[in-house]
Image (cartoon, rainbow, N blue to C red; front, side, top):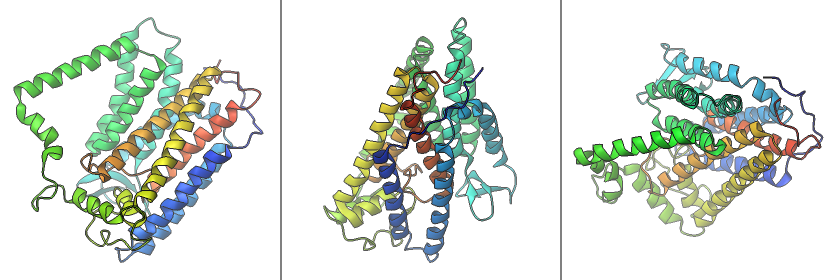
Length: 380
């Protein structure tokens, strides 16, 4: 594949979109400190998160000045590197790191690197390039589809061995959504999808207990003392205490040994308790603006014939939309807790860094959309 020369642009990032992203990062930085006050080493979390944000913003600045064609060129090596990193986590300590029965991290002493977060981004970049390459060879659609399944399957298998079902679902569904959006292998996808749905139906009919397990979360009494969803109970209690205006920044009580994972997966519940409905609405509307703007950027890139950029922007926004929806659904008791962080807000180095990089890529695509070269494709 021959790429066009690196596109230079004198365009500035969209000010409103950039400001919204930075505002959410700062907001999450403050709320993470408040949520971690229950820990004796809360300031350690705060200092680490400060470093992670600085690293993410530095990487994001570099990304803003990197043409999308460069990302396309190196998407394959990046994907291969990520696969290797996913395998490295299984090496014995002190290289691999296991916590709570999950082996997901590489130990870099000061912080733990989680390759599955990098895979969310590298899968989007790789799949976008794969879709471009497959447009030229549609003579054997089933062969191309099997290649796609194999690519996704390799990553999924390694992440499943880490027992990270959440990341597996995000990566798989994002890749499949990109296939649907690109219009590739629709027949094959439809056949496989209906076959899987039929198989699920057969299992439910013949094994009714499987359905009971699936719906037990919604049918269980949330307020029973022996309920298995203690985390959901505590999140809802905190949100109820917050009412419209909240108890005040830092004044929440659920985070004091009552709400598990208060500074990571359940930070939205802390926001609800301390800043109320208005605080939660601020987060929801900010994410909504970022996602709608991102999908609009993807659509404009497609109209200008820049398919790779369009697929990348669509993939990133789809990934964020799913992760945000699931995390907030968990906090509101609509979904069972499953270890999903809230992008830009939750504590976590790898998640923060690659979330910022991903949004910087969307900003870069928008900048290139507005250049005088924007009608050229990303590839030849």
